Amino acid sequence: MANIQKRPNGKWRARYRDLDGKEHARHFERKLDAQRWLDEVTASIVTGQYVDPRAGRITFETYAKKWEASLIASEAGERITDNALRLHLVPALGSRAMAAIRRNDLQVLFKDLSERLGPGSVRNVYDVLVRVMTAAVEDKVIASSPCRRITLPPMPDEEVTPPTVAQVEAVAA
Image (cartoon, rainbow, N blue to C red; front, side, top):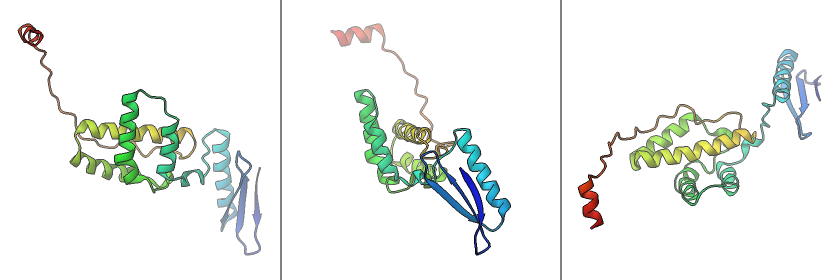
């Protein structure tokens, strides 16, 4: 499954085959570094944590469209998801590789959105992004979600006062 060979140029080539049988290789100056890399990859495969480095090259737009097409949601949920992706997330992240999206990129995006949208709308967009990234982690497209510790605008603490009986009767009349 994995091996290390010394190359004619003096470098060490470490190779392994992933779960799909594709070969991956890296070159190192020292055999110790090659062995360490192979040990890390082997451990991730054995523990089920392995993520193909090439899988994260898929663009956010491509992955999000596939994810959205497989979604089972209510009509309102579909509308919120479509709006979040079409109006905010795909324009901002669409051409980026999934593995290249960083937490700070998202923090900047949500700071910008919070200046243009209400707190509830910003949270809707964030919730959709979290669901996309969580699915990507579960699909082994990315190793971890960049959606951690994102600061969102606070929701207003508006107290709801129910109508009085007289107000309800007035509306009914």
